[in-house]
Amino acid sequence: MTSEEAGATPFEAAHWDLVPGHTALVVIDAQNDFLHEGGWYAAKGIDIGHMRRCIEPLKALLAAARRARIPVVWTRHGIRGADDGGPFMQLRPFLADGGLRRETWGWEVLADLEPEPDDWYVAKTRLSAFYGTDLEVVLRGLRAETVLMTGVLTNQCVAATSKDAMFRDFKPIVIEECTGTTLPHLHEPAIEMMRVGWAEVRDLDSALGEIRQLASARAAEGR
Image 1 (spheres, rainbow, N blue to C red):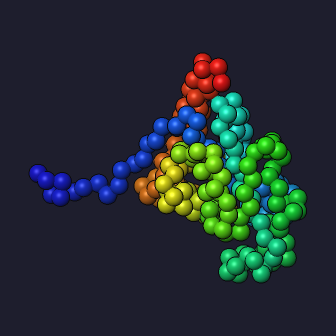
Image 2 (image 1 turned 45 degrees about the vertical axis):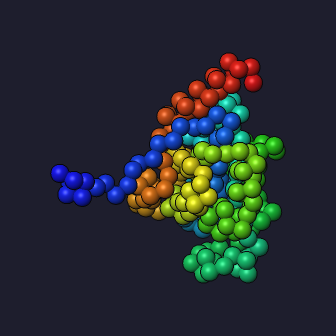
Image 3 (image 1 turned 60 degrees about the vertical axis):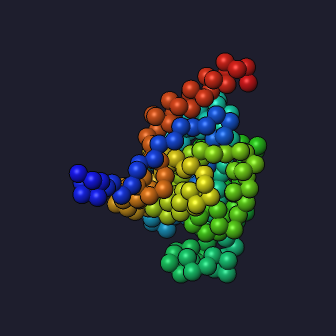
């Protein structure tokens, strides 16, 4: 029986080993306005519970990444207002008079995640963190090949950024527990869409295990 007769699988699930010295961690939009209980989203009555699920897993992932000397890149979604927000602003009327404004407290990375001054920071105005930013330049400078993708929102900025990463020949690896969204019923479909389309999706434990191996290898080499 030929593959055509048997029915060929329309995709191959990705699995990419982390490349020592060529891996980066991207944390997408882990900002006060999204994740803090005093942020703009929560203040407007939006349920942020599913987004906040990513906080503790992110802490564990960040700690492991730092021990392995994996560079951390934070993206922050921020606009001046309707003029530079694009048509997206018409779909988010609750942002018309505030929220996600650059150089405000809400725009900053959630302090609980302990961002460090020497980390990389990328300002974005659209769902994809590659669009109109220097993220690709940063990742090329870091010699990244495999890119751990985390943050919010699963079905929007995480999906868009991971897809654009693949378009640029990076190998995106989405850590499921380290993502979240305002619409929980869309989380699993978005995760499945990424898994069968353009990214590896793995759980936190497997990611931590491989990162620990990288850290051990560095220690053995005295680096």
